[in-house]
Image: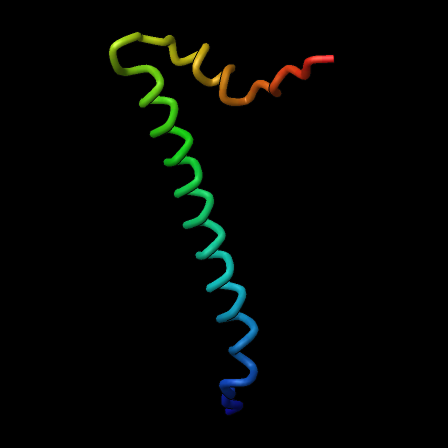
Length: 64
């Protein structure tokens, strides 16, 4: 019976670790965008969610 050494399992463990870090980063980034959008929609002046998202992703206009 062959045994698996730590050197053989290290690349798989590294891939799993990097995949988990990528997933956590993506979820936190999405949560940040959601929190930012909600903060724009709620408050003294209500802004519709569609308009808030449009304003977030819209490129700034350049004056010529």
